[in-house]
Length: 337
Image (cartoon, rainbow, N blue to C red):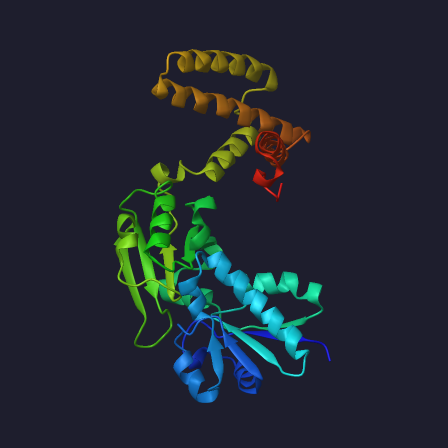
């Protein structure tokens, strides 16, 4: 019999949000593991399925969240191999298995390598309750981010932003600093705790600078940053800049390549002078001017089908990776490039 792991979603709230199929699978489990017992459905689950184990101790003993998730995946795979399919292993995660659940990503990647069958059963995602509780329509555009990896994120302020996995004050601080690159310090954001759980749900509006000064963090916290069209905020967005250039190009309000050549030469000469005189204020203005001419040039070439901005970004990553390989060795390069 083939080894198998079944992953089920516990939903985002109490037992009223469990699906009947998930509940039956939990009750029938030979061995039941919870990623965390910090979930409002657990008291009910204890009465239905008393013999379960959680991985909460790993959060205390591991240095990073990534190492927690790696260990969970390794243990589940080892357990499945040991039982060989004779005992049904069920792994329960908060929300939906395919929404912001890194352990499931690891299992989907690794189970086939070990000949282990993987079954996923959905539950209500925390996104369902976010739309209901915060009261915005996702058709307006929204972005979902992992708070534990927020330093790598680029925000489009024209879309609603939801930030999950803000487990502690350190993560909240990193998220705050990342958002401050795009929004004013006093921009209103919302911290929603235990959304959809009767008697426990709490939504607090607060200025951005207080995001890391809350009393509660953890698995049930979700941050909502409302979208905006305020020019002073939107103008910080590269997506908005690129859209503006595209609109100008379509209306033929951008320079041609021949006139861009002269503009680029003039801007580069002035920038070199500002660098020589160590004038940061002039450097900022001249770099912006030079980049604008370069982006207009790229857009003109996109219009005729020569190359795209994506091609340029790919080349930049490849060139940077080559430099890192040459200077530091392959271990220091980005393995994804």
